[in-house]
Image 1 (cartoon, rainbow, N blue to C red):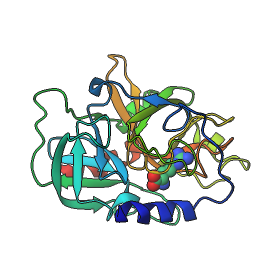
Image 2 (image 1 turned 90 degrees about the horizontal axis):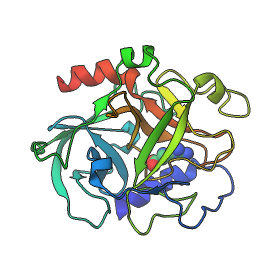
Image 3 (image 1 turned 45 degrees about the vertical axis):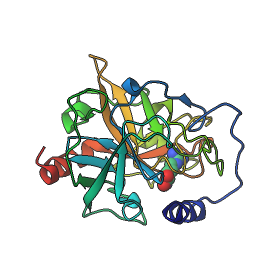
Image 4 (image 1 turned 60 degrees about the vertical axis):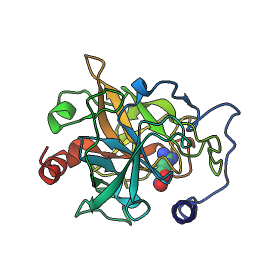
Length: 258
Ligand code: ARG
């Protein structure tokens, strides 16, 4: 697909060094296939080029750097070949402070041309992490978070099966992510990091825009991040970087009227 190759050209040009091999059978990078829609009823694909999350019947949250590569949203699928529910895009609103050089404020809101039917329960909206949620310690360093996506299963390893995959990675403090061996001060408060210092598990190209969630006390998913960037995928000290939902929360609420 044309749009896909444009996104891929962009992301590959931002990858600096040699690819690493994904282990056979491991997905996203180092994760597993999602086997039930109950596990990710809020997940959408933006024509295979990016992921996104349903936040209301009319709105989807994705990454600003995904804008321009899609005009349709597919909900309710576990594989890119599944039909699911397709809805046309009315407009895409990037965060006004999005900076494509620093990747700060990498949030975009997708307004749908028609409402999604969220009454059956197979397709659902995800809760968003508020500043209070953050302050109360529900997305603190060391806590487990799970990221979902249809993207690559290793650096330059296309997810040819088209399955939705997921992987669980711990939240990492910005202080840790900013260490000289990691991202050396380039992580700001519009970003949240997740992964292992030793690497091995991560999101990857094609996962952008998709949700990073934590599970609250009621075991309900709460979205804390939007897949944004990383140096390569699953490399040691090169954590996955996500747009921090709690920082964008007020803008998301104002823009959507949620
Ligand atoms: N920018 C990528 C995309 O457009 C997402 C990269 C995420 N990388 C990572 N190492 N977590 O799909």
